[in-house]
Image 1 (cartoon, rainbow, N blue to C red):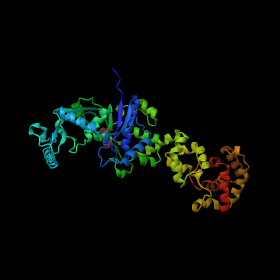
Image 2: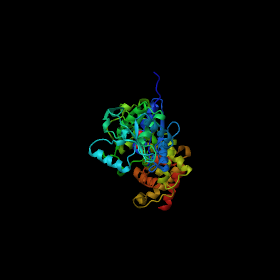
Image 3: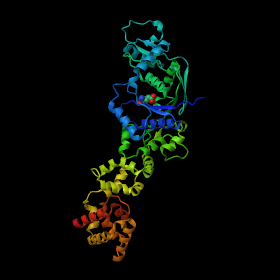
Image 4: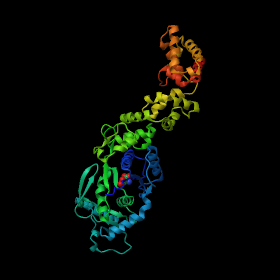
Length: 471
Ligand code: GLU
């Protein structure tokens, strides 16, 4: 039997930002396609002209780009396929699977209310063609003629779902203005794009039943459906604006790395053995729809930070600086200069184990990027107001100045500092507190000798001089 080529797609409606749930749907579709050497397509469902905007399309593309979710082939814009949708509606009419319905909007509404009241699905009197057709100028919609029987979908995540067809409305395929509705457009486009697996949110589950009927009426192959549960907020309630964590852009601003967010989102609702922290290659090797959980997943920001932190440790300096620069600039209220960037880059092995997010990273790097002179006041200036602080700093400035550039290492610096406290019979605190205040201004920082080593000789001596002048 020839191997079928797997085609998946992500089909967002451009009515807002890239929703975090949508991003996860896209990720699952991407991984599934890649696992099987297939293709992952992107289709922008922009037929609802009132609600679709170019800005929203751009936000979705930007979000996918940031997340590193590359799609195969050109982007398909649903609004460009209207002819194909109409042609398909005509074919359904010709084969008797659809009919022209001449109910006026008021009549439709009345019938809708009546059918709801009687607890049955919508049927139009025009379903029975014997009723005759009014003159050609009367507006009409094209309705799908739901057949008798039942519809079964073997969903790859939800299992077998069964509907009685009499519970399905005779849905509109083409509106009175001739435009296609989503239910028709999605079937036609998925078919034309050769989509083999439809992976999407479980809010579309019941649509799968309706869409299967349309596929059957057309005699088309029915794709595999996989409906994934929604993402809930940390409080267990459906994710909403209230949670403030809907769009991928929010996570960008929270300082996550794309690889960290990809890992977290994938793990949210999908699990494989004890895999917790993984990269794309690792997940692609094992990704299977059967490992997606049926239960809704709950956002857990602590876990998200933990996973992101693990990715921070293994990310290349280029990646950290590419995504982290924005946070360094924010923290420093302006762009870093070349020397500062070099300093930060050299310090990455020290900074990253202390950083779960890029915001932490900018915070940890702050002592390296502060502008001279560092203003010390209040509690921060206290260590420098001790009677012998100035003398200690002055002595240390002299001793440290003696170190040659190649001796400017944490080890050699520590030897110098320790020799000084031994010679003067004082505790480390006597030099540690004023020195740290001068050099970091109270910003988070590692061991003192490491601080000096990372700052470099010039910057260290300069910052000590600033303090000697000030106090
Ligand atoms: N455009 C639909 C949405 O954004 C998705 C349609 C589908 O995946 O079949 O909810």
